Image 1 (cartoon, one colour):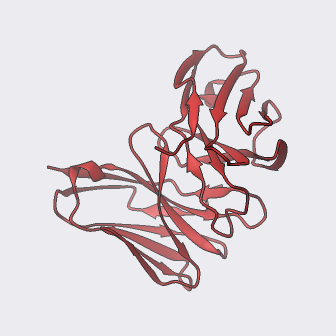
Image 2 (cartoon, one colour; image 1 turned 180 degrees about the vertical axis):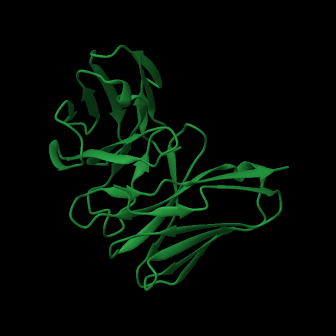
Length: 116
Length: 111
């Protein structure tokens, strides 16, 4: 139990639609990051928010966007869904700092997105 | 792009045996972390080893790090059926605030 909760746990969308995934960070954590994990692969970094500002982005197109709210919860939005967007989307929270320096991040259970 | 590469990709052993997984990475690191993922679920942080450490223990887990070879290993001793999961190594990217994961080792413990 990491204290990071995500919703929904599973959803099915049609190609071209839009989806919003939600994440509640562990209490007191001001940094949230999102990862995409395709079946059989390791997680890939999408972006990170620190105190409501995006402060890092991976190699994902602009149709992947996010928000962080004053209570540090977060949303991941994906527009114009493609079949390849089918994956497990993981949210992770941490108390600021740098993962390079060893700051521990805590993952939620993820949201399974299937695009048909 | 993946930073770490785990080896083997899949490992199946009998309960009670030891399981060893290896990870290689490409760039210089400050630390390396190992995570566990039960089928289709979230990642659980297992252990972090810093670049100035060579070995670290946590319960039945032993992690080694060889920065000259850019490699790490995770040893699980006296394996249990509940250890069945995928195991990932990850490094912190110096330029961006992100973890870079390998593709993982799928470990199956047979009762």
